[in-house]
Image 1: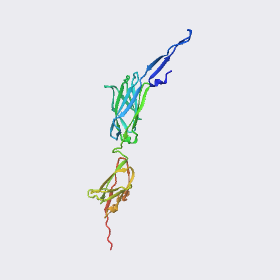
Image 2 (image 1 turned 90 degrees about the horizontal axis):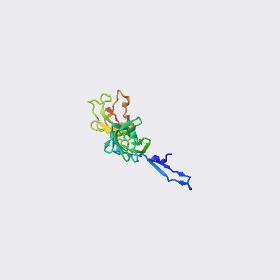
Image 3 (image 1 turned 90 degrees about the vertical axis):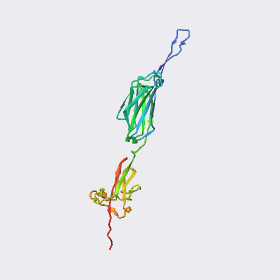
Length: 281
């Protein structure tokens, strides 16, 4: 029977003997035989604590044999979090100052299986380094990956690394741009002879107030994604009225609805025309 201590690398095998043909029964001394095993210890680290889409992160796996016997080879299973893409040609392995043969495969569940046929002697450490690319999908993940090493029937501790994902330029917000201009032919598009209107005011549904520049242009970054409404304040344009549109009925309203997607840019233009009031007799 193998004792529970075999799971920690030691097998105890104990035997005793006795004889009954002497005047008194005599028991022999106990003789114990201790068989050594390899014991694996894994440490996982990263070269940074935080990253954003577009960054490259380097991971290091250190697998140490803390037992008293050699292993026949080492394999590591490392599950990457959502949005981290393994760079296949980046993996390197070494024991001390010597490079060792190393291979890696990635399945559809983002599980990286790293293998080395080289065994570990007692107190030797296999160092594995590889890189991952941070994709935009990473902002939807938790940034944590978990690794465990095996050698035959031996299994190491489980270790993990948590990478904090910053949204960077890819966030849940978008940008709204547009212009207010004089539409002379009522097609809703600005032509070279149709000037922009400065100091026009646009109100957003969240209360943001935007004022056009000298060319009639405006922009608003950090707009929360979703369906948003922008409305032209005609009181800020004395002498002008909303220009009729011959082609798009929805542009005949001074209030516009637009869908803002995360990280995207949406344009809303407002066309106006001079308003001439008849003189009272």
